Length: 373
Image (cartoon, rainbow, N blue to C red; front, side, top):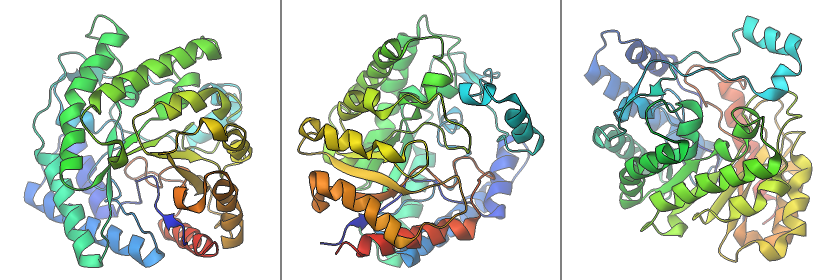
């Protein structure tokens, strides 16, 4: 049985797409029809490249979005001003490296407004365009299965911080209620829904560094509770969840271990669980799944990241096959899908990996998965 292939979602955007996105971001005049046409062309090309690389379960590359979390400011009311920037704690431990990143332009530039009013949907029009573009491209290039990313309530609260609701819990609840229709629209279209949840790991050393690990786990559990509320009525088999510790090259010495987040991750109402296992800080954590095999629900499908998204090394297919075989040995090859550690285009116009190399990595991933036939 050949292990299927997918990835986390975002992929490199063309310069035309980036220029349109930032013109809109800066409030400049731009051709709205030209914007829509550029997005449709770019999604078709992105899907073509995924198919050419051997990706089975494709996405639109998050083409039209400024980023995987802050896009909500354009589709929901209640956001304005600017949120404080919190550097990850590991970078603060190495100030010379942090300065080098900042001086080299290695920090994405985009608006992160606060929540300053009631969060309500402006309608699903932009989402429906994204869905149409992806499904059209899938039909054109012969892929039956695709997924679309959406921000989780927790990750929105991480990047677009609360300055309106009485408590953080009330803010999470409002976000869950507001995002519910977006999630349902994606699933109703026939696509799988992917929830991006770096709040379950990255926020440990960005927003909650003063807490103990045990205290943070309680915070993360409340995030999953809000997410599960938003997913009520959606079949778990249509849902993917992605956890990560931050898609950047850095020390990552402050990352909370997977062992401490395992139970929280498994409690999410999602059949597919995507997580990092390729980068040097988390590559060893496949043993958590081995040692907790009895605690992995029978309906869960593991999607380990078998290619790193912060380095331009192209992993050898044999290494990818070795990584996949570990998880196949735990839950069986029918419950494993090959994935990436994170996205290759997390922020528009910003990515550590060269676009051509990103697709070379996906091709190597497909070749590695095929070795386990």
